[in-house]
Image 1 (cartoon, rainbow over the protein chains, first blue to last red):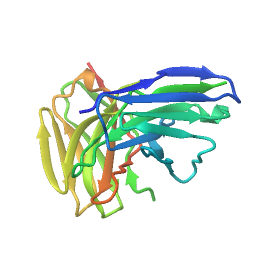
Image 2: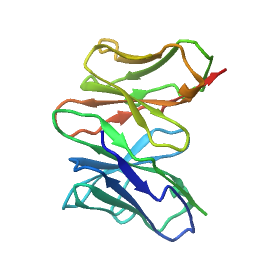
Image 3: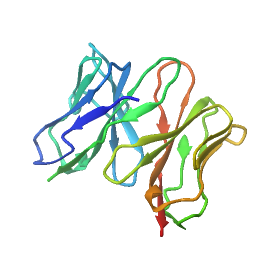
Image 4: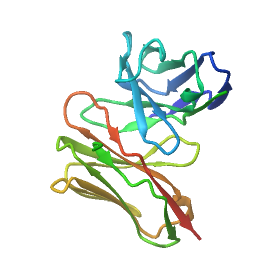
Amino acid sequence: SAVISQKPSRDICQRGTSLTIQCQVDSQVTMMFWYRQQPGQSLTLIATANQGSEATYESGFVIDKFPISRPNLTFSTLTVSNMSPEDSSIYLCSVAQLTGHTEAFFGQGTRLTVV
Amino acid sequence: QKEVEQDPGPLSVPEGAIVSLNCTYSNSAFQYFMWYRQYSRKGPELLMYTYSSGNKEDGRFTAQVDKSSKYISLFIRDSQPSDSATYLCAMSASGGSYIPTFGRGTSLIVHP
């Protein structure tokens, strides 16, 4: 299994500011994802982070609001831009290999509160 | 109708009870089925992973898939207070990119 380090683990931010969340994996992985999890809700996929190219966003999420970088096979960042209280949530990094079909692993999450 | 339905609970049981957690789904293309456990303020941790139909056992945990009914279950035997967590089911189709669809999770409370 992959060991995923995600930081910060939590933050309280002012509305209108931006926060960048980092995800570092201890081995090269094929796929990296960013999810959002609101209280009592399921995981919602924000985007797939593609190494060396633009991320693939899900419906309802746009690059201007959630820019993502993935400069190599072990690291990705998600920025939450121009934050509002509605962005308060847990943000999770997830990784998976595509050798056949394998399971996904998650980071510990970033608990974001926007005030 | 959501692709994956899961009762959010909470489900409260006494220590030692057998717990049954379930999900139903509508997409017949799903072939891979997973159960994750998520403790408060932590990321989801993979518990069980099965392919297609049948049972899989790992210690006190048994995962069961019934594709004809589009129904999956996770059984926990001899439940412990340390099993108290949210359990999420997830599933994905074969081929192409791997992007699972998650249930909303069931909150389980095992009281001493």
